[in-house]
Image (cartoon, rainbow, N blue to C red; front, side, top):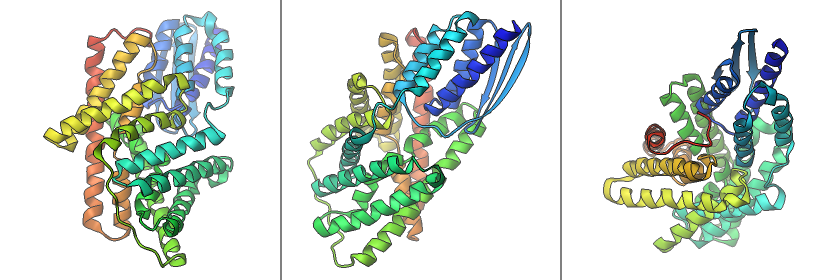
Length: 407
């Protein structure tokens, strides 16, 4: 029995690391590990923060305590779907060896979206965001091109671990410089809108929402650490944008700052649909889930647009988060797939990352009133999104039977 406990402890250690690096929030990670312990007849108590996980595994034959240092996480929906399916097949200690082999195979699988396919999805992502930021056709084209360059640079720099801390500054500075260069070819474009759309891949708006949710569920260390990371990343990105913009204006001084050409209001809808398609690469989701990603994005935007027109953007964001989280639970009820396939694309259409980025940029340009206003709006919007998520997570399980999911 002691050998079985050692084998289970080793498996839970590997599983916890796999779930973390695939993007599972701390409270869901703790709940999943505790549920596995109940299923196999041992007591598992876990405590997760961004960089550390503590596991206490106890049974009649002994106790094991594991302390792990967690690596940086990224979202990989295909891997997370496979991991949740794996956890559902674990019925007892006899299945641990088989599940451990399957876990190694899941983690060794290559990324679904890489190379040129990922770069092309970067064009869709940045081009659609340029529309949502109020840009015209020039900003869509320039933002999309900058997004492709940004994604390519992000993939290239990811192969050099020593540059990871400086990656946001390097990429944002290069994007802002290229935006000034493109202004020579497209003088009617707004370089700031194009640059902001180009760097949207790493904007931490969704991370802010997760941080607020963790704080609200009393995961204070994880939530505080994630929130601090949001502000640090925003300031690093803002510094890179200022550096690249000022260098570009010095090298290419003779060009217009551009004037925005309004697009018809209906263009926002195909842009949201394109954003959902682009989520395939951002979330590393399987192609068969594209209709779910697009549907989640459109649902969140429809609810937000309708409610915000009547009650304001803050209530609209809350209603959008509540609707998309409830739809996620319904999707799990009818399909057995993780609800995050619906929730994340919808929330990304609502998250306030661009507000915070523009606020930090304004602060660096010493426009304190606008900067503080935008940062405050970002925090408020992130908070109401988290409230909408938590409310749906509390009510929806009472309405839908949460089958095919861990307790």
